[in-house]
Image 1: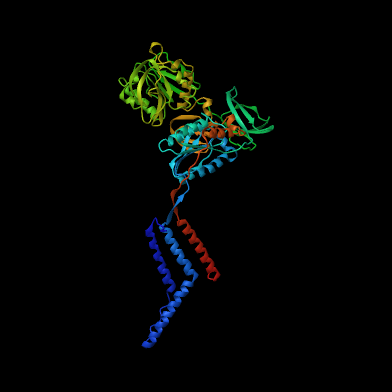
Image 2: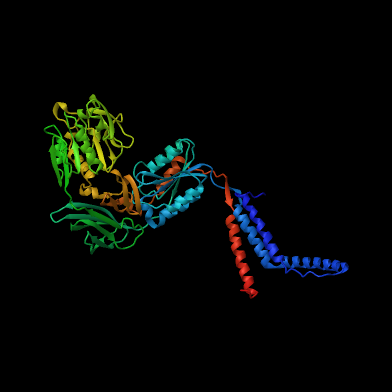
Length: 626
């Protein structure tokens, strides 16, 4: 077999063995004497014998042989020898769906899942983390890259949506086909039954294999918690559940707020039961609640509470209309001072958010210039749809500020329904499906904007973008009254709640619930920024709260907790899921084949060099020359 080299020119280094041979053969130069010819011939014969003797002695010298081999091996290593071999890996595209839910923290389940996943690695691989939303960790990469990514993965603190993750694998394999390997404890999930998703994938010709990890274990966890405002501060109510078969004395440590005061309590929790506890008069800062005893699942042993300092916000409402529902909603927002004016004032200092709701008078160039300065300086603006924003009326300079390109006003007598494009905290609990729109501003979103709500034909209704250091929001739901009404959103009970969320989001404040979230929540930021998550630093304009702990976002500390009874139940047995998957579709067959892999040899040559050098040192030391 001929061994190829990546750098054949490096073989020229083999010339270095010539100086080594010359060095060993070198002898002192003999003196020049006048001798007869016969004696000269005899001397020549003697020199030949001496040369032969030197060469023989040279070959027998172990130091010479070692140094010769070192030079040869170094030269060959520099040339980069390699050979190709066939590896018994599947040639199919393999999608590894790994359950990254909170229950996978139990007794090393996730580590077992990684070990099993490495056995299914093929020539081409993708990795999907099954969280409450699928997270693609790797797509269409080779075996070495796949193994590197697998080593870095960690379980999160959410409930997995296995069905959605399998659907994500179907989309990746839609063109070329392949197999999906789902590795999970199958104890709990969101969304559809994963067995149904498996059957659907196999109906499209894909091979799906379910691999179960983990076994039943004992656990005690914090499964719920909520805050209520009181006279002296906030009151926290928490719930601890004992999943064991015996009564447990659960010791809980509490580190309270910014002052760092530590207390503890002990709860007597019966087997398979819950016990509630309360913390009163909580002050600002982060409070940590922790079950002190170690058990099989530690991710639910700690809960966090974040209470922000109260800050006043200043909102400017620019409108030429009289009575407006938006004006009433703004006046009801706690810790917010709202100023109403007909024009944009020349002095914009002190305003955090400007809401523009002009009905008849378009903004002038000077007003637009003032708003531009506020936004680029870090302020925020909300433009409510109206006739003054139509392309035929509005000033061209205003278009540069809007997160969409406005066109004409569209009438829809039969009403147009809305849909949530990107679910976030702004759209959560908002019943946009109940909103009827009879008139709207036709528009196209800008490429760098983010649309959260749109009409059925994808006209943006709630969209935003960042400009400079600030944020601009377009709200396409005009709140005009009586015969001029564009829709019914302002008549719904969610309307004032929406404004509380929107102003809190833009101004950096918000309700206490915005600071205390359940894992799995997705929020949109007003601009791309650095986010400190419990496990590291991220950058983006959207956050998936998939870890238990404290997130630091735009100067705010946000607590994220698991709070899920079923996810904390480590005693669940998932054998029925595996049985149903086999009964409905039959066991999946994995067909292995081989593919060509390059194996480098230079590392072995270098190891050989180090061993020879060690042998040389031992020989020299034995001779007494060291």
